[in-house]
Length: 433
Image (cartoon, rainbow, N blue to C red):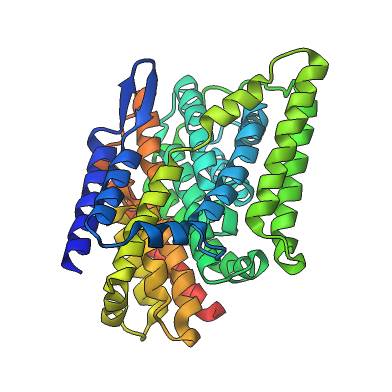
């Protein structure tokens, strides 16, 4: 047991260190993320040390079970590809410009519009997609309008990582935990919608209090006029994303797994994009950029973390942690502990670790703990940049646009916003359950 804990601890520490200090390396003309390979090395050491056999690992990876990580990855990557494709045809930039035009010259109104727009779009896409899409746009607009970008960037990040709790597809941690406990798409939404709205309202209120003075200055520029030139591709993308979302709702009731519905939607997208390219006699550039932008690095990272947790479970570590946490006040305990743990080991490995721990609980309190862990995994993303990979990518994007938000600035704002939002979400969850 001790050896598995040691290997897992060193792997998590080394992975976080690589994200903070050596996020990418260049191999010729290619730049690759380092952290997935650090995690894979730790997983390989765990197998080599005999903490879990290669046969048991293979059986778990190929099992027809709810928590098969390959199926979960297929679901998340498929929905991400559909969203990124819409971004490549200009859909999100178009909506952002329209939204900011409605705000006029008032920064206070613009702040509210940014928060609301990001919130709504995150519900139907995912936090990672929105963060990576809106951040460059907000940096560009703020620079040209001669206004401080920090309030808008932090509002965007908070809104995306709060509203990502609404649907299962909003975050890979949602998908993993909901799948692990057999929670359907609709059941998840009915439980999580009110805690999410409560957290979003509290977070907005705190953000406004933090930045209301900076928002008094007028806006000195208006957003550029944008148009979507490729309307057939837009129609294809919107139709498939809508149909995929509907399929995720009804799929469990007609025997169609969520991952399969999402994969079919992407398959249709690939065919449709290639047909459009053939008709136009033009390379499918949007499709190529979409596939390039998909978060493929999550595949080795999630598989490695799944291996580590599988070994810890086999060694009895997760059972022991469950015993220490106990079975009283589970919503509050698992909510706060998962929130803090996400900022020690990142929210994806935290969710993979907590799933078997929650599974040790009695049936009457198990689902409450699962939903609370979902809340912790999402809101933990904006306590510190370590809480989610989106935070690391977000800070990297800001550096590229000469916007200075360091670790401690992030922490101060994150603590002020995330703790009240977490308390509100858990309180409402307790009432809903």
